[in-house]
Length: 579
Image (cartoon, rainbow, N blue to C red; front, top):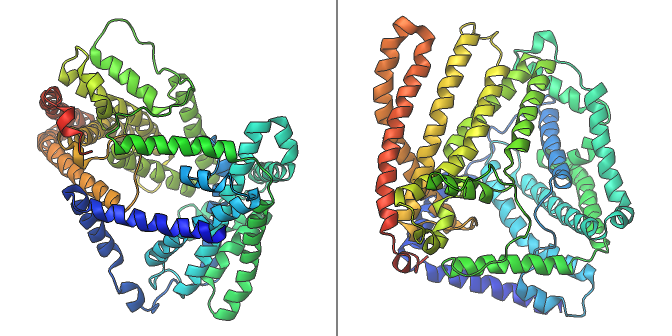
């Protein structure tokens, strides 16, 4: 049976390779693959990994090693806690329909199926290990790349087994309720103890940052290391340090000595998964049906029925019987985004902002500055990358273009409604992050950063960032409408070199559109800022931002009118046949 299963894996991999090779005949896949290969060549530069010797690796001094171990261990602890507190989507294990038909009726125990599932995941783990080593192990971060390669294999295998175990436990809890808690009391008890220990540590053991160390990065680093070595967190992070230490070893004897505890931890996670007696067949079948329906829909142009969840979603606002047509499209797309109830989302976002503010105020200016800078960077990230990540617009609705074109709605109204929903979704976190950054970044370092200056800068960015986001969303929808065969339609995010190449091409086009849209706005706003600075002072910043926003709005309105005409002339029988 094992030989037959590996024969199935080998044939599936070969057929998948042949299918991808056959798709290269189409120009969109050929150009996308060339773009992906070119990007990988620029990033990894063939031959640079083995040619560059570790002549100047990261100095693993007694001060650096604890900081690296602590940072990596804290990240791993968060990764281990997140699956328990995050609701997730569905249960079951990742088996295809062919595997279910081939393996589930076979005379195999659940332990054998779990073992085969773990072995199947090793292919993706090995690819991730080699990519990580090429990215982080080229003689600059660690002294021996081979140590990093083995350590990453142990780490990724442990995380894969842990994720598999948590999926099984959560599936059992969802199926059996209270009985499931009694059945999996050790796992649930351990995680509850971890959360309780973190609360105790935060309340009584976190040391305050010294007054003389607020502005020094080394002082903040020492505080972080001491915080992770105090109270119950010291014992929580110690097993996770075992997974990090082999990569930082200096020689082979120390590497072998530090690898033994990591392998023991991997064996413990593997035994936890194998010995768990959980019924996962029904949930796995349901999951496989969802995946198969999604693939069938994508392969046939998206016009086949697909399995949909019957879970009701909250409406963002009451929809009236009369009003602008684009309001109904915005309402529909906000529901499509997910759980969008502003009555719950807004208080939660405000609460998170307040918690970050209290955290920064409690621990000193250095931590507050770090959180403020992070909030500002996240706001910029959402401005540029948010339109690519949020696809509840024409990139999804073009699949149902027959239904959209049947409505008595002008084309410009459809386009406006489609692009407004992602902009509104992204604008709220942008404003909250800007407010958090303005409140957290201290002004001791820069006396000019007064309260008036903060208000002027934040209000200016609050006007500009949603406009830039709107242009990015508009560019993504323009690509989907004008070049539908070159854009992946639907919410699914395909993987592979050609998918990465398509994203790079779209990202380059979006950046070009952003530059072309922002440049005229800057030409109009900068002279106004220079002239208004003399009589108005810092009040000229919001005025110039408003002028730039009006220019971008005028450009966007012209683009919406043009795209509306393109939507009215869109022929799905011609444009979507090749998708």
